Length: 277
Image 1 (cartoon, rainbow, N blue to C red):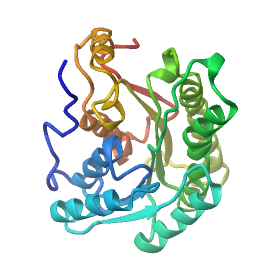
Image 2: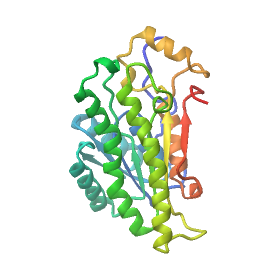
Image 3: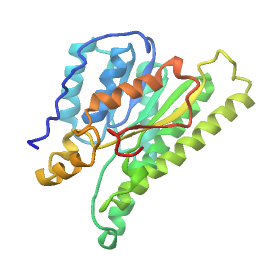
């Protein structure tokens, strides 16, 4: 295998549908990789975007410039660390102030700190859990409160196939991503329960749904430093014989975000080329 191609083979460069017209999506880790592809896919269906990022302001500004060129300025960017609950609440408030509503939350931000479990430090364990799992909860909490008030919304977590299968050297990452599956199912049940109790559930309602997408190995910057021999071994384990493209994750996200997906909640959607069946 040669160097990873992290560019889109089918770039989304403008509107292609209206499934999400008038909707607003807040996407964490939204200015690069899978997150950027999700933002563009949602925007292609008419959504306005609030894209979160952690620290790379230059990259975020570049994303915004490219997005504005293709989607006529329907995006804002918001800096914050998802492992800090106060940042998460602030970003939700900022998105509401800028856009007036949040219809879709995509919890995509995540990190890795790989090491064999016996040599993993407490800090390496806690840091990955704080960003990937706790950060997902910290973002979902204020967003869900807003959605319950309005009676509609979509929350979509981006987990990983590693959360379903485990992986050598990734105890912290696997645990954090597996935890997101339980969080998804619990929030899905709670959202339905709260809407019913408040009298906001109806047969024709868009409702509030909570689902998870579990990507396999995706051709993004996260894999750029993986040795070629290791990537060859990874690809050999994938039945379809290649890495996933970010756009393939994004298509599933925008499907789950649509009004017509109101009967899908508490589910785990694998996009992994057959690695876990």
